[in-house]
Length: 330
Ligand code: SF4
Ligand code: SF4
Image (cartoon, rainbow, N blue to C red; front, side):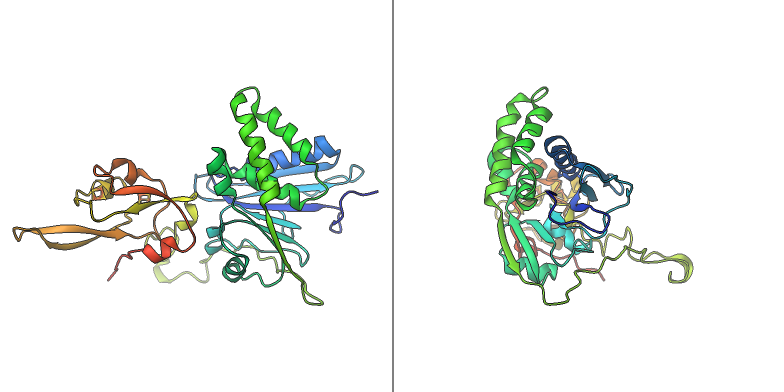
């Protein structure tokens, strides 16, 4: 009897992980596939797509499973997955993360927010939403987000055997990093146990979310005269918040001495200044805040600040938006 309860017309159960470079989605995909192949005897494949391969840029990892008597001859990116794992919820601002999700598909999101808030932001009206505070677990256990996400993914893929994953974790870490074996197993187990689910039945005849292949914004026929590129690489419109990995700098203006060291090290000119006069009436620039739209969370500013006015804060939903001091461009 088949252990794969859901399969597409080619006989595959498919998973797509949406993440950013540095969060470990590639490794998570490999470990998931290894566990299914070695632990359950399934046929499986896994590969990733990295874009520019920079830490902080979007990454996708694809995992396919099928019965041992089915050959995997399809090595194309997964367009209509059964499960989508969203490692970084802010990604939805720049990437169509739900593209192609089947009507009975499951979306797993790394978040501390409520089901309702996530559904509204992601425009995900029906289907099963799974939510796990993967970052919180990783912080508690001094491990990585990908292991807690794997725990939640195993709960979702109920044909998978958690013991085989524990074995893969031991096998992956025991030689070089034996001290990481137990914390990672704890992280995996917590991801498995702490994931929450909410299902809203799809209406009759629902077809799922249409797959859309991303198209270049500008091309031969659509570029403006002179070939000026107005958006790509343009720092005015760029939103880098999707590159943050769960932390951002918090500014306390009461202790700030306007030394501008933070401004000198910030790679994205996030600090917003205003001209004024010092106590003697001489012109001076005063720091007013951080434009979080451009902040990728590198935390170089925190390291350099001589007064401790910048500290590391775990990112919570809505904090960056409500504390953003926006640049004004004329
Ligand atoms: S963490 Fe600090 S230095 Fe890094 S991008 Fe954000 S504001 Fe700039
Ligand atoms: S480095 Fe610290 S003290 Fe100096 S301007 Fe930036 S926040 Fe203020």
